[in-house]
Image (cartoon, rainbow, N blue to C red):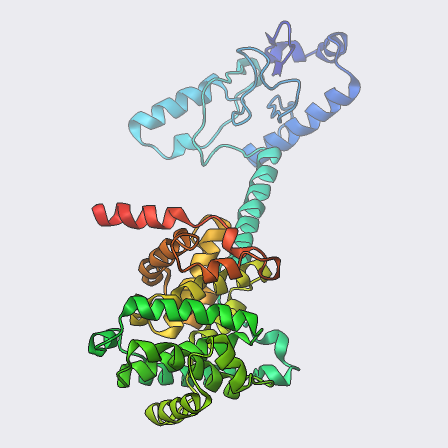
Length: 436
């Protein structure tokens, strides 16, 4: 039996336990509680090992982990070892050589031949597991299970963005998905050719950009609805795609397109005289009405087309946007309205790219959730090229002559969205990827 002392660990053989052994143990600074506990553990250990009771007292001792016997010098107890006799150790060594399975069974020796040898480890299947280790294992399993549950909680899943609008009749949650499925089909039928300017003989892309930049300022001065601006641009491009216009009539086309969009979207429509006034009286009332008739016949009176605005609103809802993200997204997409080269993208794609770029601008990293991908039907990789172009527009928004959008979104009404630092890392990442 091993009696451990931090200063002088000693080894006591069974011979000391006979006769006055109990008295000597009391004299060795052991209390009655310790002696009774060790005796009880010894009896339990003996019964477990041998499967029968013996007349002589068991001296097998099994010690658990405690602060007194962990890390107390070189003879400190290893919690995964248990006492083994020399005879048992010899049997184990013999069994390793001969491969006899009977030698693996532990046997108790007679008290007079009993001695302790703690430095021989048993096999894993024969080692008793301390209660403290069993408890630690259970805690570890609980922790792993908790981590798995937390991963399930924070896993990016597609959310039902219309769940909160169940009682809102204007949100039409019952058939809003059908509406946007229809918009998808319609945008494919009403897309504008990105090369129509080559058919114009007297105007070019730069003139179109000047017209759009001016109309954005007019739209802001008249305090019109947001969808009115997007429909105005759509009507202009659809008309110029089918009808040749001289440059001195281009401004008239823009004014009449805004008048038509106001009649379709606004409650209070600007009068014709107001439009003539803002054009510095370059056109007469008769010219305005004649152009209105020509444009309506050219576009076949089709005013119900899905613009980037309707998709932008839906995707912002999917992105769970706040006011800052919303204003920045509108700033970026209005920059795209000025640029002729952005006609190569469908309205839904342009809306998704604007929101993705706005998220990158605000958060400094690319964020495109599964909910956004589900509702937009565009992945993050698909949006990268278009987003890079938008970042370039943002970088040049305050320079040059076409600064109407930048001035508009540099006011407190629009949250100073134009003053946000562009997402330069998108351009750098795309440049590095192309070079590689």
